[in-house]
Image 1 (tube, helix red, strand yellow):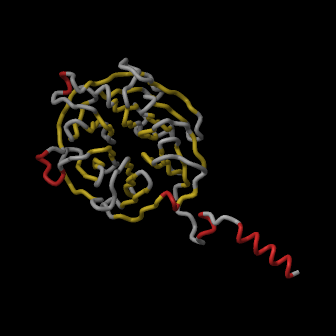
Image 2 (image 1 turned 135 degrees about the vertical axis):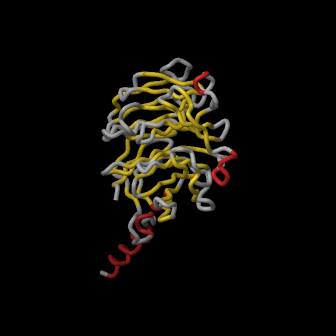
Image 3 (image 1 turned 90 degrees about the vertical axis):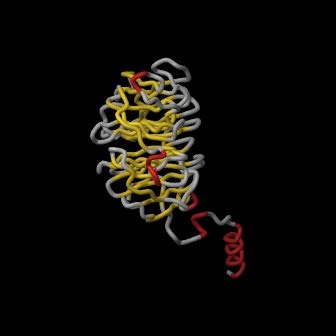
Length: 292
């Protein structure tokens, strides 16, 4: 009996200690499933019908999936035609009416229908876009159907009238504490606020371009993506998720090491909420966690 006990003890000691055996503290997030195989995914957006639109920057593709990961449509490939992209970086399909894509390298914003069929585009060099924009980083459509473009060349935000003309510009030197220096992404909420993510903070404006407040300074760096709900804001960095209240108070930060993941995924890039799931886009795939 003692010999059997000694053998059993030796076998236990030989088992490698994993993240599951190191601590009795439950994982902060447990992967439900994942879908998609991307080269260098940049951004995602979920519409009102729970369709998921994902931008893969290096392959210049925009792909549409259902919530289980079945691919429904795609558009793109490298090029300059209406249905091609040059390093697309941002997307907004939330309202379910149209899909807007920030085509960074082609210096334009394009609109597609829900099936990813081309409808229209506006170049930063068109007369209608005066004052022009350069290298758009992201787009956001408000609940009032106002389209906002993040101007990467001039570090500012432009409000567009139905993709036809620029109605106002903000976030420049006149914004004081709201002056943008390292903009990354945009998000709009249901309460008439626009959130501009910079690499090190979030700057909040109303939809008329008035600076309201900022938050996140000294709490994160190298931010990649942002999403908002009526309950708060989520900022995505390459290896950590930062959850804030609607007022910008940090509630919790969850690092990749605190998650149970099914495998390698690359850097975190963007996020979106649905009723059942929190979707985290990484360089390589889209991971779904239960939305608790």
